[in-house]
Length: 334
Image 1: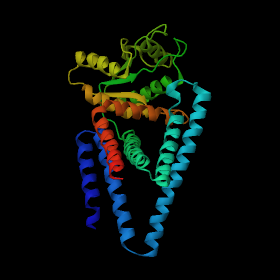
Image 2: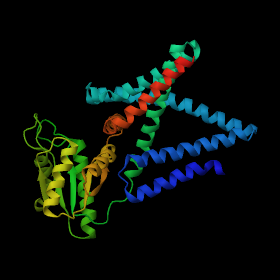
Image 3: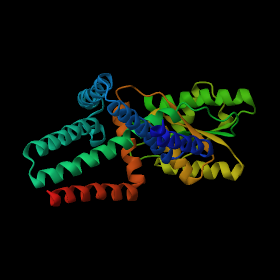
Image 4: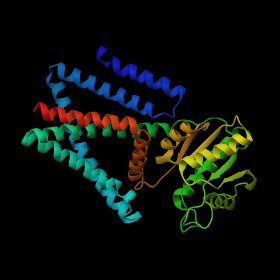
C-alpha cells in the first residue's frame, strides 16, 4: 500500500490548505496531483500484478481515455457551432471550436511523429504532447476545483453582499446573465438576513462606452422593481473590470466597517477566478455563483481558464519552455 503514500500525502496537504484558505489555485493543483498519483499507483498495481484481469482493466482504462478524447472533441465542436449561432462570431465565442482544433492538431502531430520518426517530428511531437498534457492537467484541475469551490458553504454571517456587473443589453437593460446574478444575490441576502442583521447589497458596475447609464444603477433598479429595499442598496458606479469591481467595492466596505465580511455574487463559471482575484486584492469574503445557460458554460470556462493562466504567466511560461526544451533534447538525441 506504500505505492499510494504520495497520493495520500498530497490529499492531506490539499485538505490543510483548504482549511487555511480555499481561494488558491494551488489547491486545485494539489487536488489534481493527488488524483493523478492515485491513478498512477492503481495502474502500477494492476500492471505489476501480472493477472489477466489486471491487464484487461488497465487496457480498458487506456481505451476509455482515447474514447474520452474523441467525445471531448465532438462536444467542443458542437458547442462551438451553437455558440456561433446564438452569440455571434466574436473571438471570445470561438474558444470551444479553437479547443477542438487544438486537440485534433496535437493528436495529428503525435501520430505523424510516431509514423515518420524523423528527428524534427519527434522533437515537435514530444514538445506538443508535453504541453498538451500540462495544459490538460491544469484545465481539469481548474474545472474540478471550481466545481468543488462553488458548492462549499458560505459564512453564516456577512455585512455585505457584492454583485459583480457584466454589461447591459442595448445600453440600458439588464441581460439574462446579469439577472441571474441579481436573483442569486437576493437569495443569498435573504439567507443572511434570516441569520442576523440584513447586510447591505453593493451593486458594482460602471458605465461602458456603449451604455446610457452605469450598470450599478440598472442593477439597483432591477432589484427595487422586484421588491428589494432601496435603502439596503449601495451603488459602486466606477468599475469597468472584475478587478475594479472588487477594488472599489472593497473601498466602500472598508470605509464603513474595516472589519467587514462579505459574500460576492457572480456567475458559476466566473466564481473561482473572482475568488482568486478577491484574495489577491485582499477582499474579506468568499464568492458564490449563479446558474448559467448550459451551452454558454464550456466556452466561458475556457475563457476563465485562459485568464487564470495569464494571471500566473511567469510560472506557466517557465513550464512551457521546459517542455519545448524537452522537445529540443529529443530532437538532438535522435
